[in-house]
Length: 444
Image (cartoon, rainbow, N blue to C red; front, top):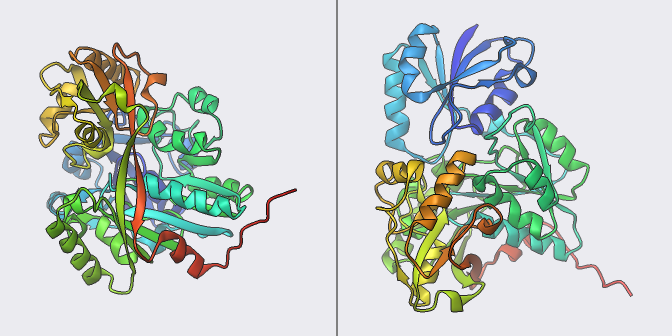
């Protein structure tokens, strides 16, 4: 029996355990490690989810920095790398450390980890996080709903709380998000769907999640996280490439996998990218996946109340993951501020706590605040940091309505991205070429 250590970030790692290792008598998982996100380490994956083969106190979760020590102490035979949106240099450096400590190094693939659904499945993935998956996912949902189809979204996991309670999560109302004490990062992905009237599933146990979602759905849309490939086998898979980070589609794991797997590739943000970068990503896309049609698209920025920020002194608050490990210097809020001639205040010298630490860790961040809120303490630090900034207005570029979570001393304008295809083919044409869809006649 091989002794396994799974490296993760509270998502793909738990899924890989559940579908590949949990009942496999050839393996014994002796621990998980965690990185990228706070408040995950020094906990345990509970026995209620791990099964009776594992101890009552669960499977321990260690900081990834202790990987080599754990390999030696726990006599680990195999390390399974199970998280996403990292450069190849990081993957291979981790492999070298694991091998130097005496273990083999493994990457589980789609065949070993994808679940098969009885329903039609469309997946939205990307070469990097922050490429615009959420906008494309919602566009696809609205298209299917316009044909009268019942659509259920299954979201890539973000279980940052009580794992037992979060095994299967179903959100249909804002009240359910409140009861679940969802973090900002969770709300960024769930709230836009809920406000548009559709059901979102997420959690830890995706076999149970899929089984439950199939009871409600005609079509399932997989809303991908980071640049990971889907947990559910798709009938159609769209992969987004962001020309603002041209070249990353060939240098980040597992984004290149998603590009190579795609049925269609969407080049986003063409209206804000340089022509040479658009040319580069198109060339790379054709090289990696010559059979996939390319969809050209603009990412259109809109603001709910432009008068609040027009020529004003503003603070910009952006989507957290895109600005931190997504390595974007800024996002939707910054572009909206520029569009309306606002003066952007650099907040870096005023922020506190974990928000201040984020700038030290992610040195690429521009004059914006990442909306980090993985727990109540960090949420309080975000609120304090925002309200320490001397400005006339605040513009938020995150999909969540932050006014529901924190107090602002200044008026708040919300900026949003929407995706708009340029020419043909379109997302609609790709989907209709696979399935014959007809619109329902309006009821009399």
